[in-house]
Image (cartoon, rainbow, N blue to C red; front, top):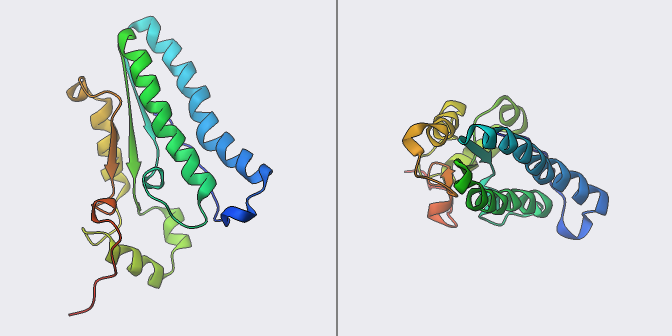
Length: 171
């Protein structure tokens, strides 16, 4: 598993070449470099599992996230190409696309009002827990997923399955 990511909210027309390069370099090129090195080791053993971490932003558009979304969409595409090319070598490659996950970082960056607003849009009514994301990754890395290859598992409490959702009205 490879997990690294940066991103900040910048309007599309204000993204500089330097911003774009930094986000793409960290979020996508980093996965390419690590994935290639890990796969080379796995080829020697003729088996392995790679699970990349993308984001729901790879599947939906959000404002001020063009570089971040492009990098995460690139991880999805890279995962599928890796899966196709590495399968004959005994390596399965999949990805997870998490939605909002409750972390220390999200706790610091979400005001109570913003958190409530996000939770109201998620069909399960809450942010995900890190252990739920870890369980999905562990499954894809396990022998139980031996015939799953090139798949992106969305772990988001149903957020993107509902499309555009208005916050729930009280009562």
